[in-house]
Image 1 (cartoon, rainbow, N blue to C red):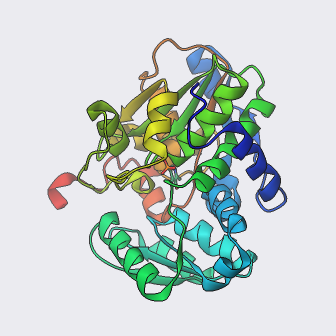
Image 2 (image 1 turned 45 degrees about the vertical axis):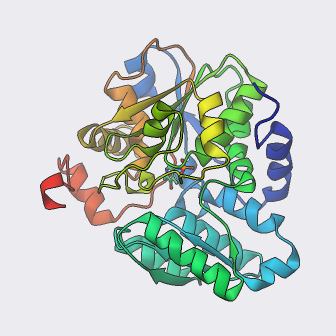
Length: 334
Ligand SMILES: *Cc1c(COP(=O)(O)O)cnc(C)c1O
């Protein structure tokens, strides 16, 4: 692994010490059903049980704690499809700061109200993550708020990487790690941690066919724009930023593969999580199970660690998926 990557194992270890006691060490439990299906041990990293319902609290807490007291007092701001906003709102409140969260009209209502409840200011602008981001930049310029981006920032990546340290500690012989990918902060951090500790471990990214920005960018050899489309995996929506500085390079260098799943496969992954594992996961949190169930992970070797990244789904939507809905967001309706 190149020593010149923007986030190293040292940064991740510092982050782990910094956020210790402020985030949960989530369990990694055996899945009897998936182990039988795959013929190798499969463990589920239950990160959807993290405080605020997703791993995003790791990066957000590390980023807020990395700020000077003066910057923290000014307040923090971000654009978010929901889970980063929720995590940043919580982290800011715990550390005596205030968060302003900008989001697009595509973000589900349950995520917006939760962020308000966590004490943040919410601004809803535009039809895309990019438009929400423009509002962030305006408020940074006008009011001096400190931007904490959802993924493309060294402190965020280092915080998410603490999840990789936990996986290696909990499953020391892990052969394959399956990690959901959107902007790539989670994948970059986890891969940096896992591959430093166990260079032979394969780290495979999973994302949805509808709007796979990191996949398209890796294929193009540079960050490219991909149209945002409604998906069951709404937390994976949004681009990687055309001026991406951290996560694109790290994902290109560290990920062994990126695999795409369909809406129907994501729905099947969510149903498996619920019926077989007794877990409520959102679409983004189910893409790794979806890939295993669909047979899209080739050359299976074990043990496999599967990251369940979040559980913040509208419960009516969850219920309709459990009842057999496979595509709640058909493209004709867009
Ligand atoms: C943000 C998010 C992801 C993707 O993380 P990136 O760092 O943007 O790649 C996956 N799952 C859930 C639940 C998320 O909230």
